[in-house]
Structures are given as structure tokens and as C-alpha cells.
Amino acid sequence: MYKSFVKPFIDFIAASVLFILFSPLFTILTILLFVANQGSPFFFQIRPGKNCKLFKIIKFKTMNDKKDSNGNLLPDMERLTSVGAFVRKTSLDELPQLLNVIKGDMSFIGPRPLLPQYLPLYNSFQNRRHEVKPGITGWAQVNGRNAIGWIEKFNYDVWYVDHIGAALDLKILLLTITKVISSSDVNASQNATMDSFKGN
Image (cartoon, rainbow, N blue to C red):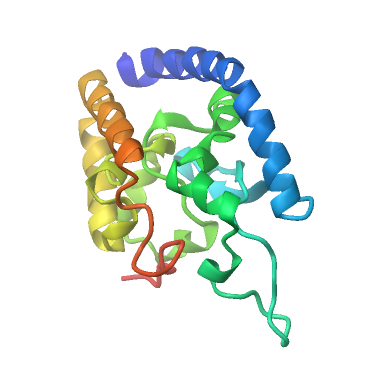
């Protein structure tokens, strides 16, 4: 009941209300990132959702597209703009995903949607993370986020799939707020993002 009806209803109503409330901040960040990234405030990327159905995720773009003399993108930390660093540290880069929640592609709570090229690399256990909608935050995020390894992260994701419920979602939401306030576990090592998943 909760998983199939209550959770999607709460997601839609809450995301719609929050998007309206945060629209002034959304506008300001869009302008600042437009300037910082020379015209590219948003980051769009195809991600697998529930049952591996592909959708287009939207986030604020925190890194520019600067390249070296050979035409290759510079390392993440060299492309991370000052505005982008603030947006990432405060997790405001996730704000546009409210639109994904309103559309029904995502939920507030669930396994984070990863890259589609990882799909053939998952074993049957890890692929179970796609039995529910992906989330803006999830059990793995409040238990280490980018500070834990891939295998541990997938274990947390599947554990959530098996224990999904209102009480757990509320716990994850409260822990997420604490993580955002403390800005903990944002970066993996010296990188702005996790290293790529290479398979088991």
C-alpha cells in the first residue's frame, strides 16, 4: 500500500510544493551557474530508473567543460567552479531533480540513479536496486555517500529495497538533512565524484 500508492502520492505533492517554495532560489542559482559555466547551468544525463527504464535526470551543473591541450576534459576538481563547489557542498545541485520527482521518474527516497553503462556490470543481487524508483537521497547516501565503496553502496541499496517503508523513509529524510547541514561525505577522496564502477 505504502510503496505502490502512498509513497508516489506524497512524492508528487511534496515535490510540487517544494518546487514552488524554492523557485526564487532555483532562479538565482540558474543565473549564477549560467555565468560560471558560460551558458550551461543544467546537467542532463540518461539514467536507468525503476525496472531499468531510462529517463533523463536534471541537476545543476557544478563543473565547467574546460579541456587540456589535447582536447581532454581536465580533472573534476580543476573544473569545479567556486559557485559549483558551494552548490555541491550544500547539495543544492540536486534541487532540479524535484522536476524528475514530479514527472514520476524518481522518488525522494530510493537508490541513487547511476550510469546506464553500469547495467551490464551488475550481478543479479546488485540489479535489484532497480526494483524501486531511484531517489534524490537514499539509505546508501546517509551511510557514507561518496565515502564508501561501490559494493557496500549496492548492499545498502538492496537492503533498502527489502525494507522500504514509511518509518525508514522518514529516518532517511531526517538523516539526509543532518548530512546536508554538516556537509559530510560529499566528495570521494580528492575527486569531486566517485570513481567509475568497473564491475565485480
